[in-house]
Image (cartoon, rainbow, N blue to C red; front, side, top):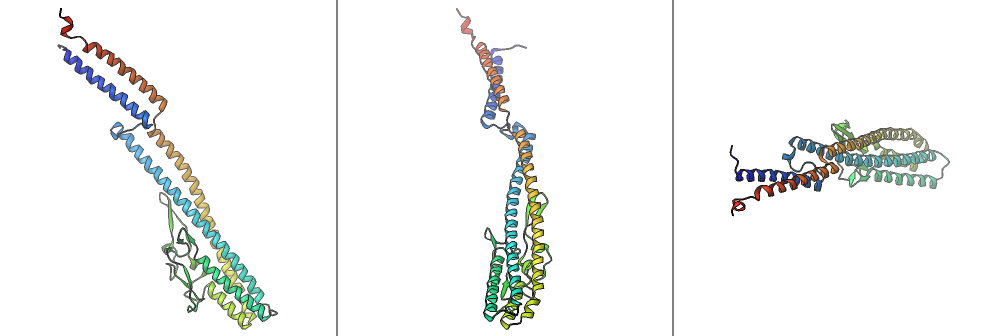
Length: 309
C-alpha cells in the first residue's frame, strides 16, 4: 500500500485529536472531582450513580420525617405529663372536697380551682406543633376543643376528625420513615379526655364534682375519686405507648444514620474521582500529547520545497 504525505498527516491529526480529547477528559474530571461527566462516559456507572443519589435523597427525607415525628411525640408526652399533673391535682381537690369539715368559703375555693383546671385541660387539648393541632385526629387545622356552655356534657365541644366510635386506623397520622416503614405519631383528644358527645368525659366529671361541691354533697364528691383514678391510669397507659413509639423512632433514626453513611460512601466510590490517580493520568496524557506534537512537527515539516535547489 502506498502511503502518501496526506495519509500520514490525516492519521496524525486523528491521533492528535484523540490525545487532546483524552487530556481534556482528565482535565474535566480533575476540575469537577467527578468520574462521570456525561452518561456516554459510563452508561452503567451513570445508572448506578443515579440510583444511589435517589437512595441518599430518600434517606435525607426520612431523617427529616424522623426528626418531625420525634418532636411531635415529645410534645405529646409533655402534654400528657401536664394532664397527669392536673388530674392529680383534681384528685387532691376531690379528696379535700369530700371532707365534711370544709367551710362554705373553702368549698367555693375548691370549686373555683376545679373550673380553672378544666379550662387548663381545654388549653392543653388545643396544643399545637408547628401550627398543627396534635390531638384533633386528621383535623390538624382547627381548634380541637372549644368551650360551649350549652353542651350538657361538660360544656366543651370536640372538633376533631374522629367523632363517633374510634376504630383506630382511620384517625392515625403516620410518618413515612423508611421503605414500607410508617410510624403512627398521634393520639386523639377523645382517647385522652373521653367523648364529649356523651357524659363519659373528664370535663363532665369536673362539672359534676363542682355541682356536688356547691350543693354540699361531700359523699357524692368522694364517689368520683375512683373515676379520676381511671382517667389517670388511662393517661399512664397512653404515655407508655407514646414512650414505645419514641423508642422506635430513636432506633429508626440510628438506622437511617448508618444507612446514610453507607450509601454516601457507595456513591462516593461510584462517582468521585481519585484525585491523585487523575493527576497522574493527566500528566501521562500531557506527555503523550507533547510527544504527538513533536512527531507531528517531523511529519508535517518536510515538503517538496525542501528538496528543490
